[in-house]
Image (cartoon, rainbow, N blue to C red; front, side, top):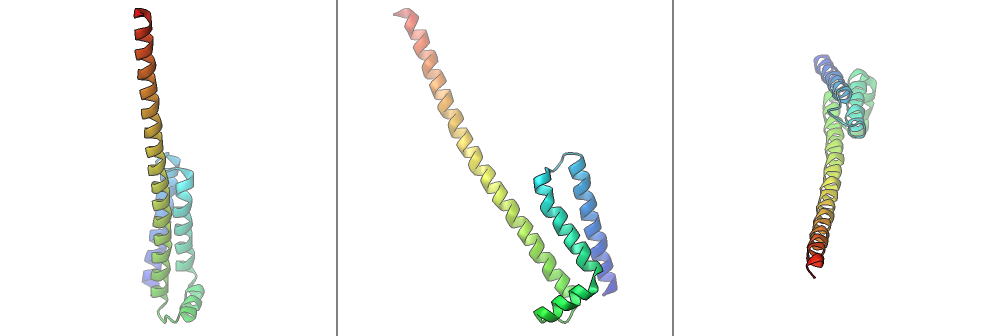
Length: 122
């Protein structure tokens, strides 16, 4: 069990370092990095606090603490992926609305140009 918790600790610390590095290099925005950092710190905390895993395991009826850690890890990352899906959906809707507004403006611009070109000939 100790080896699995050590690997979990190393992987969560690696995740935190990668997110911080990406944040520093502006590869990821702050508002999107918060979820990943929270997930990394939660896994780091749980992988080092065996008492919490044992208590959660007893509460949930799971006798093997690493299985509790795995279940929590899956839940955390499903939540992060759901949050990212919501962000992507919002951005897609915003892009559609923006494309429609640009199309309307292009139509109006062409209409005004055609009206201006026709006016001197009259």
